[in-house]
Image (tube, rainbow, N blue to C red; front, top):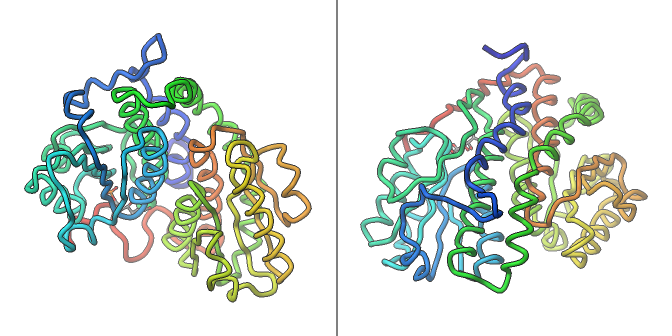
Length: 369
Ligand code: M6R
């Protein structure tokens, strides 16, 4: 069943290129436009949407955070992403022109379900992004975009996350396509790049041995910090969540811009800090800022583990460990940047003798509040 792998998680990590490709299959036509027929919300309604709210929990929430960057950039519709458990208890402002996107691998997460019920009661349209056919969340939504990750057995979500990202990009690009924005050319070119992204995920998977070795060498540590900014910030949060769940280590993700507002006080000699570096192209200002952050933490003794685009020479002098990932459009980087963090957490858990597929205290599907 595990297809020759020791754990389902390893199998599921390896399945990611296919999961990503399957989620794109049939959704991009020959002319490079999106055909999301399953989004049964009429184009006329989507054109009227004036606010998008993404609700989810855990890893799905991190996908939702990335969706916000993509949706606001490509559609210029204000978008907020909120933990489902917070959203439903704070009397959120919703109406007929609000599109709520509920992301859930299992389709059974109670908080996400209650959030979408609340949203529909207020008249909002709900689009589910879900991996489980016929589960409760898609059944109760106005429309569903299924991720085609296949069954995910390991408690720690991996391939479902990557496919949730793909689905979020598809929704963002589709909204942009339907409404027409000044980013029309960019949207076309990103759709093309997204279509080939599985190959880049594959490339990352082929170069993971040094990451595994590094993880084993850190098995005795108590704390690992993760830094990122822009779409790298949710990636940092996801890396930290994986490490908590699997390695039972203190792991925290921060927005790199917040370092000086507190977290830098945590830096001490030989503390491992993973930094997700934005592409040097595109958002180059952010790239330069994060390079300074790496210098700052290293000067205070941190052991820097830097995830950066291949050929990014600016980070090399400050990286104690450099993990190179393929170049992608800025917003798509999480699809390749998350993979080393999954491998890192899985290997650290193994080195610490933990149960990888069934971490203590956790359930695959959280059907209670
Ligand atoms: O099934 P869902 O996507 O709604 O689940 C949400 C979270 O419970 C889930 O992502 C959880 O955080 C994972 N164990 C993370 O690896």
